[in-house]
Length: 296
Image (tube, rainbow, N blue to C red; front, side, top):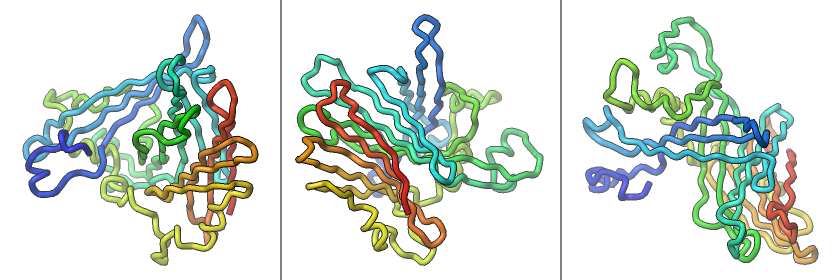
């Protein structure tokens, strides 16, 4: 979190948060004239606060709209062997006349759902739902960064990782955290925690997910084998939290290069990998090709 958004007392005590808490609403829109599907994403970001400030938190709001299935964007979805989604949402950034063709690439991996009972689910209790039952909240990992597809072939700026829980299938269009109806005082810290879920708030969501034996997944022999891509002359890798691996592949013989994002998970006694490979060459659309694979 940038220091200019952190209260001075947090900085003084060295308690600078390592991540933001957000509420994201996504809507699919239909345009009557051109009949092109649009996706509208509203992101409410909660700013750090201390003391009495946690009862009336400040937020920022960002609204993005993407035209899907046009020459300005690409949207692809696959199902893996566990019926979990793997999605791609890529879109061009900046004017088409710019010397560098920048593309924001977004990859989403659905992961194991969070299952809670009523006595654990404060969010359900706050909504007045008293029926005793288990609740299942789907979760996903969303990785986003920008690449230069024409000149430098590098990742620009930062890599953003979002660990997300689907709280409701009904979008609020970014209005849920505008404060409870009975109290115009605004958003409080308890509402944030209840909506995001204790599994994320109290979990080490930005750490490497270790095995039950305590072993680091990156130290497994299978992880090394699955990380090697045949036919590449050059390989650079970045290991990220949540067992995400980013790899740069250079195929000089084919005059092409690619970026592959992989998610590693343990299925029984086997290491399971899902990956999305984007390959860029001289294609005019700037997106290149995209493929998905799954292996153990």
